[in-house]
Length: 343
Image 1 (cartoon, rainbow, N blue to C red):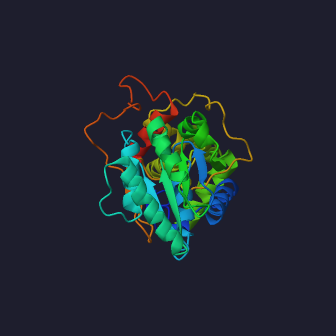
Image 2 (cartoon, rainbow, N blue to C red):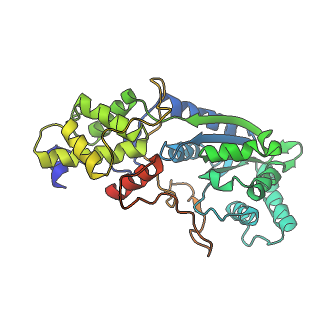
Image 3 (cartoon, rainbow, N blue to C red):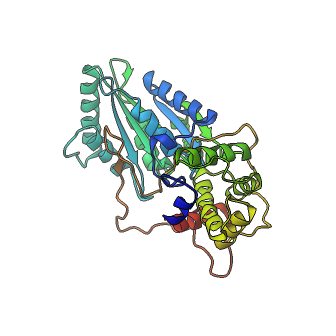
């Protein structure tokens, strides 16, 4: 595109494609990745990764999955996209992922099919791992009960399945209300948003990989992007992308505060708004290789993520609707607006 050529880019620096060169190393997410991987390698029962929307949980899951050797593990990624998922649906999907061609509808029979498959994998010297993205959609009594059942399956005194759940704070709250499941949590960690320094490093890294000048954004512009995005990596990408285009329209050699202000205005954000409570501190970082939307999944080379059906006749909860008479009022609406803008 013309504005990318104007700034000397070989590729789009703020695309949300999950490409390895754009991987941004950070302490917090790298630690989470190592801990989750350790949990899988040691056959821990339940590991939980929590964080806000757009913080990079999906990327961490996929990086863990890519490091699980096929000779030692039978690992699968389940991406949830429907709040109507129930216990029966979950058990049937797990059975399918493990290789059961036509899972039984009866609860006891499908449990038996799952156990037989897990036991067979154990005899082969392989351990089953189930990674679940957007797992907050399971935070209800039925699905959580099904998870307890799966985690209780053992053979010759050994756990047959490790489960890794990634989701928002709703997931943590749901688990906390289920004492039996909470006691099975072996590892729990969270991903925080970026602080201002990390936002600057993230943007510079993306620009450098794309073939541009890492100092393209002026310091004041970087600070404004950090403030308006609240450090959420997905929002950083969207706002930085819009600011880059505004700088081109202004005919400036660098992206300055004016370009960011125009992007913020065009996106319907109030420039005078204060940052949300709980703005991350200077020691908080994130893992930012892009985070896909609720309904998306990325093929990762070894096995394709299982995606829950989007519609099953039930009503979907629509909570992020932009009001006609004013700017977005909360972070969820901001995220939706930015995502629509950069599509």
